[in-house]
Length: 164
Length: 102
Image 1 (cartoon, each protein chain N blue to C red):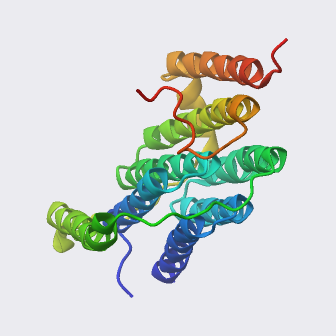
Image 2 (cartoon, chains in turn purple, yellow; image 1 turned 180 degrees about the vertical axis):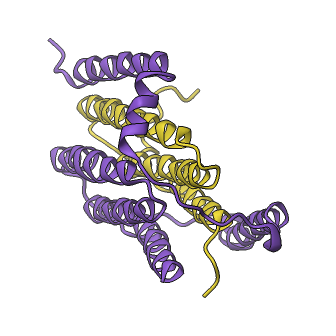
């Protein structure tokens, strides 16, 4: 059951990601990206990371994608014209990609031999431990990240402002 | 059905990372390049959460929260840059943005 759900959602994530590249209109790409985010949120739930799954849906699929769609609408971005790819890229691209993925698979198989593969154990209790960790051990990084967000807010406003 | 292990999640993460890299390298629309970068950051997050589960340590999930915050900040600034760029050059085609090309 677990494996079936994993393959369904992982396949959906990869399929939506490929669709993101294939679609020529940015709005369709944005919708595909929302599909990727939703599939990944389901995978996080299966990994027992309920808090991350909720944050993924709220922050990514909600806030960030609304920002993207808003900018696409604002810029009235049309379809992207496609130029002829270079010959080298067309012929060497697919084999090189295949080599890379098989290389990664081989290394993974070597690093995690089948007989010593770690099975997922029980991993209960999520949100409260994360909060405790963030506000105790990771207090300094947490504050630094809040400064980063402040800089990002000010920077976005300054960049998007109309020149006087 | 085979057991799902950490290796499966790492392979999924690699696939998403590769697709995101291909998007950054091949697409010309700047908005879609930004979306591909979001895809790459998501691929990193899968690794963190999967290892957090394997090692039974909550630290990975805390770092995933940091990365999500980072991605949101990056999207806000990136889209601000795109709007400023569009106001000045009337294009979001990465090939036509060559102001700093020598």
